[in-house]
Length: 213
Image (tube, rainbow, N blue to C red):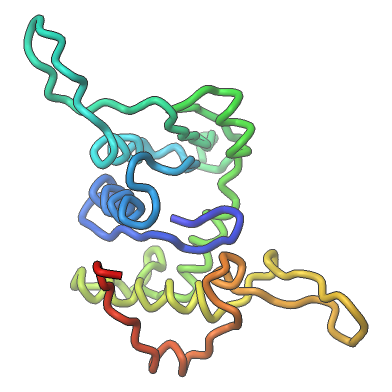
């Protein structure tokens, strides 16, 4: 999952099914600044993300004293989720798109999310260029999930910290030959003040989380 404004990859999920992978993504987001409700989400037309949102953030309605007590989790007010469903012809070529609001008020959701998955489509392509294990119909697939996870962690680190994204560049004020200053997603999100080198990635050890501070 990426944050649309900064292109930062904020969470990943790797599992045997897309629903389980999406549950991992939302569990990660729940630990990283979204403890009560999911952030506004836009995706393609695959139908497992809403189930994952309900599994992680949904709540069982309170028992009202009549009938059988409810046991199934339900979506909560305030959620915003928009799907962009691709329409294809008989040969499988995309001929159009259709927007479908899953959670939230239609006008508010459409205004906030815009109705385009271009950024996530672009980052998927970038991931396949950087990680041969994700190439479709290729021979570089992972035989072990843990090896696939390790490669995904490395790819996300390089993308977030060491790779300039052209659409994130900012114009440099003042005189000089350089007009634009490149930025990584981490720089755009305020998490880094420079582009990390590969050496920095390989030699920097993150400090363990201390619950007392």
